[in-house]
Length: 201
Image (cartoon, rainbow, N blue to C red):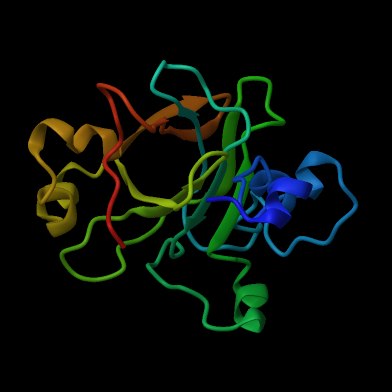
């Protein structure tokens, strides 16, 4: 039931979800002159690990790329380490966290500049944690991005192996060489036959 205040003045942004996330949290990407602590560059020049570009699209149930999604990633560096302080992050050139909206790329992609992560612990495969937010979603969606060329490590990873075998491919990015750069491609399907596996966190 709507209150009298809502009837007179309409719903507030807190009651109507988006599209605010990408514009608000990656403001500089969208051309706004606001401070933002994180962007799509996760690894600077002196970061440890193989330089990679992680790119993909967020796709709706009709197979259409979503233009106002926000993707956040967190990961360790090439040695499986997370910086513990801002000073350490600056020293090793690795921020461990990135944000990218899908609305400024011609193909509606997210694109991160980072390094391929090392394994965080024995028995874990290298992976990147991802959070997806967009207009119309009340809760974030959480997933993981594994690497298609880590076959042996993936086969031993308890989290990946807990996913039904026929759906594990929805969590695996594929490696490509493009103009001398290493690119891992990973599309996130929010619904439909190819829906990405999401985790309760």
